[in-house]
Length: 141
Image 1 (cartoon, one colour):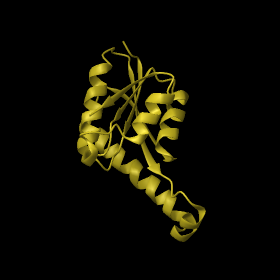
Image 2 (cartoon, helix red, strand yellow):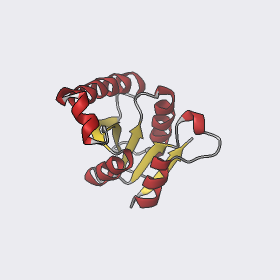
Image 3 (cartoon, one colour):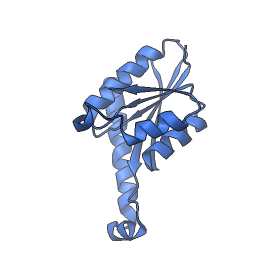
Image 4 (cartoon, helix red, strand yellow):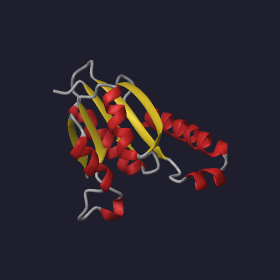
């Protein structure tokens, strides 16, 4: 049904990332389906915070996230799955929407929220992505 999926995970929440990746693999059954795995490193927000953290802080965070996602993907995803890894910095929902357009995703698969909010809330990032995406969005609880 879907050929190209953008799978947005939080590499710092491995249990949630595992659930999201598993659901995405079940959605993409075509042998030539591509699987784009995305982790967004939130930016520092305000310039004053960024200046206090120093110029290398952002690069180091991105580098650490890249290594973590590579390791996680190697341990978690099947070797025969065509997977491309993306680590970007910015506002989570904006980055998900931007990367989904860049990779021409048919579907976006992402988690619903932080675990402590699981009972009632969809979560602001999932809600914004679902509201503004031009493709189908699967929100995994």
